Length: 371
Image 1 (cartoon, rainbow, N blue to C red):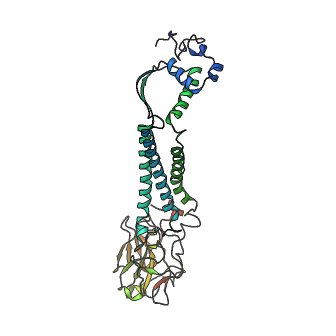
Image 2: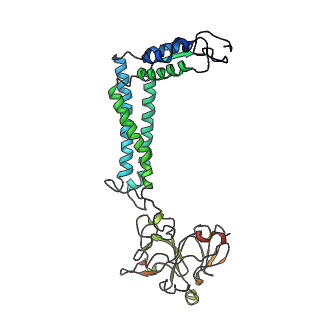
Image 3: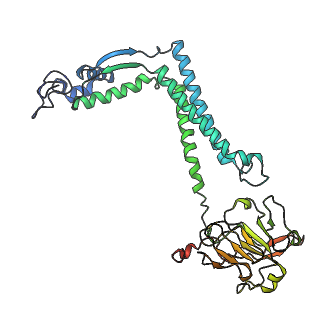
C-alpha cells in the first residue's frame, strides 16, 4: 500500500501527514461505534481491514451430538487434571499428617522411598491432562479459518473493532454457554494453581531458623549408630580402627553435618594424647569421636593412619593429629576438627553427652584466613 492510498480501509490515509482523509474513522465516529454490538463491530473490522478469508472450518453446531461429545471429552480431561492436582496436594501436604512421614532413612518405609516419585507422577499426569484438554478444545470446539490481511498502522476504528473481535472470539469459543466445561475449567485452574504454589509452603517453616550453622542432630543421650542403624559398644572395634557413625535420630544418617568418626586409639596413643583445653573428658576410655567434616572446605574426612594417628582429608590433603585434639598439622585447614563428648548408657552403648561445642564444617566466620 502506498503512502498516498485513500481507499477505504483501516489505514484511512494515516500514512499521510496531517488529518486523516477517508476511511472508517470519518464514516464511523466513536459515538456511532459505541452504539454497535460486538458482532457488527467484528464484521466491520474485517470489512474495512481488507481481511480475505481463504478457508473456514466451522465449529460443531451448538447442541449437536458431535459438539456434545467433544465437550464431554474436554471436560473429562480438565476434570482429570484437577484430580491429579488435588492428589499432588494430598501427597505433599498429607505426609506426616494423615499419611506416613516421607522422611527418608535406612530401612524406612516404602512410602518414604516413593514420596518424590508420587509428587512427580501426579504433577506430570496433571500437566499431560491439561495439554490434552487444551488440544481437544482447540481442535474440536473452536472454528478454524485461514485469512490474510495487509499490515497497516492503527486508528481509532482499529482499536474499537479489534477489541470487539477479541470479545467475539470468546463468544465463539462456546465457554459462555458450556457451563459444565467452564466450571471444570475453573476447578482445574484453582487446583493447578494450588499445586504450583504448594511447594512454596516449605518456606513458611524456615529450616534455617535458630542457629543451624552452629548446631547438629547430636544431643545428650543420642546413641552412636552405624549406617544400618545398629548401636556400638566399646568392645566392638579393634585398637587403631575408625568407624563412621551417625546420630540415632530420624534423618541422622543423611544429615550433612552429623557424620562422626569414632576412633579407638592404640595403647601407646592413649598415653600420648594431649586433649584440647576444656575437653579432657570428651573421650571414653581409649575412644575419641571427631566430626567427619573437614574444617577447610567441608569435604568428608575418611582416611586414618593408625600407626601415626593422623587423620587425612583426601580433597586438599589436610592432616589432623588425633593425639593433639585433631589439630591441623598439614594442608590448608586452619582449625581443629570439632570433638564430640561421648559416654556409655545403661545398656552399654555409646551415646553423646551433648552437641559439638563449636560449629561443624568450614570456618565460615573467618573465611579470609582460609586458603
